[in-house]
Length: 314
Ligand code: UDP
Ligand code: MG
Image 1 (cartoon, rainbow, N blue to C red):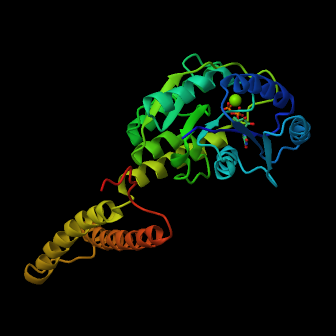
Image 2: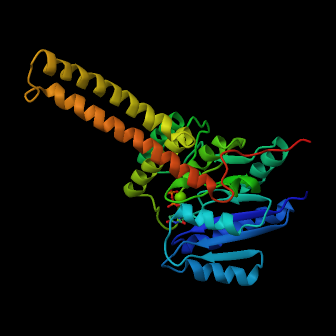
């Protein structure tokens, strides 16, 4: 089948970047010789971003604009792009000129020649403030440790995807950082190539400490989901069972002492410890059962399956 290409570019208050990014990009796309569409997502910009997009669209009918009612964030903007993209290969990139469209041919080639499902850009020579680079290094190591995913740089938006994998994603919060982890976990082949990275020259970064904390909390959810999504009872139930068992034996011991050795219970801290362990343990087991019921509902909804089939051989 012949490939078609969709380029997804989220933009939030990037009025000075829209024109140059389009110019850079379209010269690369024309050279590629593959039919393409450009999806510009205006993520609730309050400056001239949308007007700039519209005037480009008047000249180029391969441009589609998805304008959000308000700022929903980069993950939501990417998801909207995925929902509306029609290409067989999808490329995502930033609109702030930090990514270089000249890397796109290599990203596509790696999918087509080497049979990868996703190819991520690795900003090996990253042009960002030092504190951001240090923080990003730490975040990347933590991510690798918790998700067992191995690519170097999961914060780079410049990536290429086969259509099947994006249909399998649900992005919200700051989840776009964990796309490679989520896809790898579902069995897709994730690769990476080194890409160019440039300093931001126009507009300002939407990076803030608030966004970092949210990203960290999302990582906990992802890591948990990845490990226990099909067996929540193993973690909740296992933990609860251990607690309840210890609590049970402590209580048994205390009851024995009370009944046969006539020892009081009131001023013994062990009584509280045993009692709480028993109660909290039972709570955890109940939580495990509830989580299990919730998952049954989740997978019961249409098209949600705990597996992905590659081929069916008859
Ligand atoms: N962006 C967006 N919505 C947001 C924040 C950012 O669409 O709420 C876009 C932004 O216009 C840029 C990309 O996401 O194209 C990356 O944002 P930014 O450059 O601020 O992040 P950084 O590179 O500093 O991590
Ligand atoms: Mg940027």
